[in-house]
Length: 464
Image (cartoon, rainbow, N blue to C red):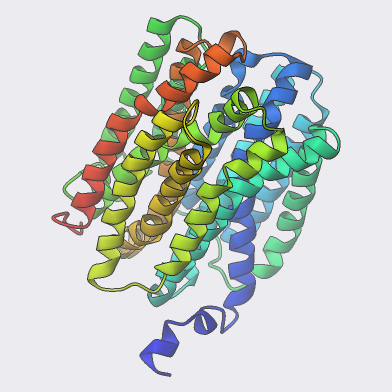
């Protein structure tokens, strides 16, 4: 077979890889869509169950569970085996969806979201382990481009799915439908992951790091919902500091949570993980707050708001597939072009979302999607190629955990900005207009630091 044919889509799906590829895509969809679906249904959930002040907690609570599960998925797959662990993760997510669907109050709803996050985090983490262990290196860019494609689709179809179901019936139906999908995933996993590595015991679970990580993520999430501005800012800052402590503890722990030198910004792993964290965090305000702001200020329906943010997904998907075959110098160049697009998108959205021409809102969303479409698959591939064989499982699952940790931090930062702008007291024209500015302005410094780390990843970073 020629080198060109070895790196083709046909070869990617050959030799029994198609069923695994399909399961990975379904798992990524479940994780991505369920994390985003609340964007369009939370106004209805808040109206029925109460708790506008907890608007972002529905996302942040989901991510608390997803982060803890995703961070541990590499070690869990080593201990219990990829097939059984993946099936159990699907069943757990289905159970969390049922709890949210049946919730009589906002507290029960949020517990259901936490359980969904645990199941979803393991699903996504195990999918990354499967990519690292079961696909040849020559296919990694295309596999990650496909994962990016699914994330891009989910970015619009998650909120759109929620809006469509809400318009046709009840918000609870959204979770019944996700429970069904998770059940199908759980049933299919043992069959489609045949041939994966057997359980080998592994070195154990890094409980200390996971416990500290849980404290840090919980502090960040709590900062999203407290009403006192100084306390909210302090909790988010403390939570981010605790995340740094996790990296420090991991350096000396007998069972590592992260790959070797993952906290060293001079290395591929260190700069790559930090860039993923910061750039993801910088985008969360758009995903969470754009739909309700459009509903309030421009009188969009829930479904219309879902369609309106589709510019991000469409651009993300198109950009990812356009550059999937790039090699050599161009994979690094696309990373740099992508992160520049992200910074520009935040400026455009801060200026246009409330009162600017609506076409500029669409352009800002498209630039944000293009940023990840150009950069994400190449950043992920560079990370995996830098990992030793010993670190493949934990390093691949850490990609998911780092991304979700960034999403939780970004959700909290934008939540603090929104609540300080009056969002928690009720959705009014004044609070929506103020929120539409500060959720972007507050994360521009974070995006700039993430862009700097991404430039290091493509330049002077060491392999290990």
